[in-house]
Length: 533
Image 1 (tube, rainbow, N blue to C red):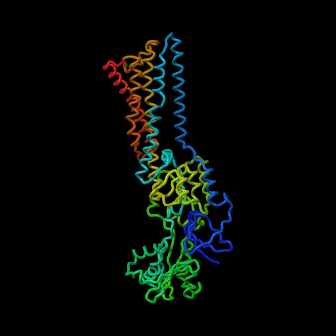
Image 2: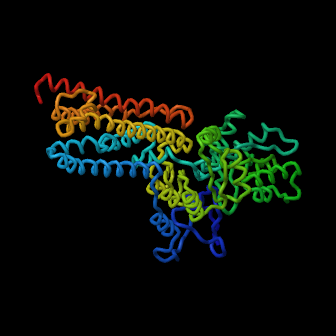
Image 3: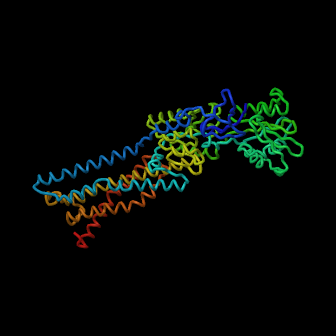
C-alpha cells in the first residue's frame, strides 16, 4: 500500500492536501488535481462523459445569464419610441391630404431619421467600449461591455474562499511555545526545520520567522534535508549533529516517543484551538524535545475587510462560498467581514444559490478561481475569475482579474455605475432633443397647409427646407460632440439616487431641450447666409 498527498483545490476549492492510498475509501483521485509528495499510479474507472469535470461542463453549458433591469428598460424605451415616431410620421401624410395638401416623401424620411433615438443608439457602443477600456487600466479584462454595465446593478456578491478571499495556500500565522520554552528557541528550531522545505507552507514559515525573529542562518550546503513524505508526515534538517523536525501532531509525538496524553496541557489546548478554528497545527521538536506548535491557516488577503465594508455602503451584500465545514467557514467569514456564508458548498449548491438570488430579482456577481466555480461564474450576471486560477474558471467568467484581487470588484462596480449614469444621461438628452426637433420641423412642414401653426415656429426658421436640413445636420453633429462624454463618462458622486436624478434631469434634460433650439437656429442662419437652401 502506498500513501500519497494530493492537492484537490482545483476541484474542491480547498488547498489543504488530502491523503490518497491504494484500497479503501481514500483511493479515489480526480482529474486536474496536483500531487504534493511522492508518486501515484492511477487507473481510470469512470466512463467518458461521467467524470467530475464532465458534470461541471454540463452545469456550465446549462447556465444562462439574464438581462439586467436597465437593459430591459432601455430596450423597451428605444423600441417604444421608435414605434411611436414611426406611427407619427406615417400619419402625417393623411393629415396633409385631409387639408388638401401634400408632404414630400424626403421630408417625412428626414423627420423620421431625426426623431427616432439615433443619438443614444449610436453612442451605446462607445459607452460599452469606454467601460472596457477603463477596466483594462485596472488590469481587468472584460469580455463584453454588457458585463461592465451589469456590474453597476449588482446586489449580491458571491466569493469563493480559497484563492479569492484567502491566499489559497496555508500560511504560518503564529507560533506557540511549549511551557518552559522561549519563543526565540521555538522560532530558531522551526526556522531550521523549514529551511529545506520547498512547499508553500514551509516557505511561509521561513518568511514569517525571518520577519519576527531575525537570526543567523546556516548555508544550505551545511544542512542535511529530510523531505516531507506522506508516510512520515515529517520534514526537517540535520545540522551539526542536531535533529530538527516539524510535522503533523501524531507524527511528531511518535518521533519523540510521546503519547498525546503526555503532551503539556497548555500546548495541547493550543493545538485544539488551532484545529477548532479551521487551522492546521504542526509540532516542532529538536533533539528529541518538544518545543511548541505552529499555526497554519488559509490567511485572509490584507485589506479585504475594509473593501467589503465599502461594498456594504453601496448596498451590495457579500456571501462567502466554501467547501469548509460550517465551523471553519464561520471563523474565516468573521475575519474577512462578509455578510453571509455558504459552507460545504458544491458546484450544484453554488449554482442553486445564484439562481435563487436571481429569481428574487437580484443581480449577482461571482468571484472565483477553481474549476468548481465555473458553473457559478457562468450563471452569475457578472462573473470575475482570478488570473491565477484554472482555465475552466477563466473561460466561464465574463471578466478576468490579472492581479487576482477580489476586492477590485469594488472598482468594477463603481465603473459600472458610471456607465449606467452615463447611459441614462445621454438617453435623457436624446429624448429632450426630440422635443426641440418637433418645434423645429413640424411647424415648418405644415406652415403652408395650416397657417395657424406658424405661431409654433418660435425659432423663426427661414423655410421648411432649411428647417429639415438644419435638423439633420444638428442630429449628425450632436453625436460627434457627445462621443467624448460617452467615452469619459458621467462621474458618480456619493449622493442619494433622488439627488443624482434631479442633477441629471437639470443638466441633460433641460440642456437637451435648450441646446437643439440654439444649435438648429445657428445652423439655419448659416445655411441661409451661404444660400445653400
